[in-house]
Length: 265
Length: 320
Ligand SMILES: Nc1ncnc2c1ncn2[C@@H]1O[C@H](COP(=O)(O)OP(=O)(O)OP(=O)(O)O)[C@@H](O)[C@H]1O
Ligand SMILES: [Mg+2]
Image (spheres, each protein chain N blue to C red):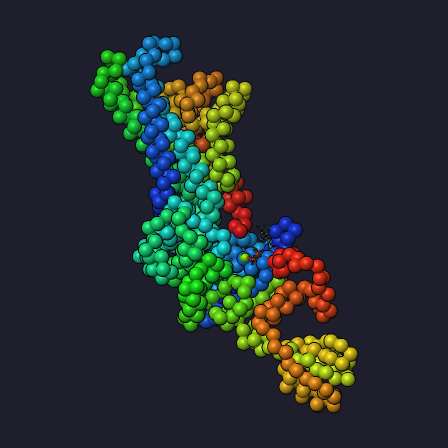
């Protein structure tokens, strides 16, 4: 299993699409942070005053984007095997297909963490710069670090688990474009609708489960830019984590029984 | 125990019967050609041997076990497959490293096999830029990674240049002399004839012939035509001795897979009159056609259907 995991890490390292996702994480988070940091709000109703704890909270919640990108990373890990027909050499080297899926699940956790670390680093640069320039005249290092510690662990946990969720979804759907579109449409469109219509069901969906993890600091969600203050009563953070793990494992298991079991011709 | 053993192997794809109750075995120290027209079921059989396609019935074993039960399978079996793929952005060397790592194959070995197939200078190029022949060479390199005992190759000459084909032929001969095993598919008997010791001919998923190339060559060159007034007696006499024979005209009999010597002696022993006897040559390729598409047309009854004479028609052979 160790060798399988090393091989999966190696595969990720040796294609540019992985580095594109890492770069995209950094660039998008830098951009969105700039939006929060530099766009003047003049005390509008929904925007906290600059330099306050709530403002830092907003600044850092941008990191949640890494969660969606972790999902894409996990999905690509498995669907690119089918897309480029590398499943043949992969299964020749490890014919016990469930083990291959398990190795990918494990490596996707690490992939999600990597994106969360990149996101955290970019967000911290903004945090430090805000403190250094004395944003709003009140920003302190203490406030900044406290808020970062509130937000980052939840984002990181969600990103880690979303990597595995992406592998599970990809194992089931097989097609790369379909998997990514289904995952993002479910998160950005379907879930908010379900959440608004039937909040008691919504809280069990992967997007709201991720929010439960991310919003330990009770921040507003800025997932993929689709910020929404919803009526959904989120699960406690650990239940959210278990729900995402559940989605990843159940989908991967379903995939192992269907797509992964299928003939490779 | 045979190295490769296939028993009652059957595969249905929906209503298509790709492989139909196929049984054969291949022993050490030989190159076996796996022949048959397009759609005969060669690829499907090889993929079942490699655990990539699940048989509908029967089993396919290597060293007595299913592929999936081999420890570090790449170290026992090397495979070249038609529709195997590469990530276009990954370099050739990294492709080999990623695959080899799973079975504990060292990075240095990747360079060795790249060298062997003539890709040493291209190892650090992304495979997306490779030509078809270069990809095929890389497939071969991957098959050799684990220094396997068994090679299973699906049309490995595809896309190779003449030097590549010559190299492959030599390599397979050398490989078999190491007391190892090669099973290699091809549609071209003439091409395979330069490399293989034994052949297995597949047609519509079934065994259409099995034997050593030497035997096949003998059969290939021996159709005996006899002119005699006693055609009925001759046909039944030959049939009694297990020789396939049929009336060609009122005084002509054609016997398959035998020699002038055998037929002549039989006729003399039984007091039959010989007016004329000739032995017609037949190329290996003709024999191959006869075993495959011919086998369907002539059927067991041995009566050829007249070929329709309407234009050039579609390309012969292939799946029907
Ligand atoms: N995945 C599949 N789905 C449906 N039918 C299939 C599939 N794979 C193979 N077949 C069918 O099975 C039969 C045997 O195909 P196979 O690829 O094994 O033939 P082959 O002998 O390798 O032919 P070729 O010389 O063209 O490579 C064909 O009728 C083919 O259409
Ligand atoms: Mg084929």
